[in-house]
Image (cartoon, rainbow, N blue to C red; front, top):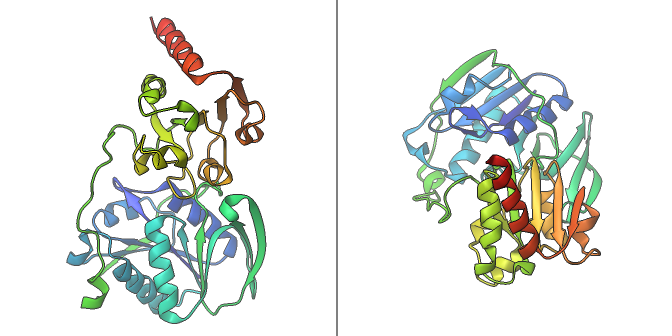
Amino acid sequence: MTLVLVEHADGAPTETSLQALTLASSLGGQIDALLIGPGAAEAAAHVPAAVAHVAEHEALSSFAPDAWAAIVVEVAERTGQNAVVAPGTPHATDAMARAATRIGEPLAANVVAVTAGSPLQLTRTRWGGSLLEEAVLHAERAFLTVTPHAVAAAATGAPGSVETFAPELSDADLVVRVNDRIAPPSGGVSLADAKVVVTGGRGVGSAEGFAPVEELAALLGGAVGCSRAVTMSGWRPHTDQVGQTGTKIAPEIYIACGVSGATQHIAGAKGAKRILAVNTDPEAPIMSVAEYAVIGDLHEVLPAVSAELRRRRG
């Protein structure tokens, strides 16, 4: 039996959680789901699992990593789960690490494939996604997180049943919790969810140089991203950063403008269906992963593209 920690938003499981459910099916046997917090009961109706366990508690109105860890352990032990799987998102990874520590088991992070057996055979991404590691996991109860957007979400359907319960939480479980959220200053389309992302790198030249990047993103209904070099220069906020230490994205098309393509940056954009690079350097590393490339100055190329889009739209 496998328990999958399912994150949810707007009354539905997240895409990365559906990916985790898909990988969990490789383990065979019954798959249960665990959903936590406000909106969990609504989202549970859309989770393809034998049983959807819904944790409801007045203290779960905001994320509390130790509370989530306590709930994961409580459900896993009560239902006799052999493995616990979760999406490799910041919140889920934080909770899983704490849950594994509580019962003295190892956590295998960034898993992209698993073969059932004793021990489990795992394939994991390492070094920012630049290599794959074949590993074995020796554990009485396996804890795994799934690399976001590395597994196609094939899990669909509804649960066999939904069981709501009130978890047992101590004061210590609620010491660390989210008290407030600050919305990104740019607003608009979320970088993590956007179907189109237009990113500017060091080649943009300045904060003001992002004007054509913003213009094209707006015309395409997309989000604006940036590289780490840009945030280090203070041209854009960290919330706009694409990369291993920023946001991991999975758009239909990723337009990288003036981005060299360091390993850490590519790690955040590996989920993109198509990559278009605009760069003056034909030997830039980004070219090795791009399906399409325009060799030229982004300050000339992007305004020309935006002008053509406006012309065609009449």
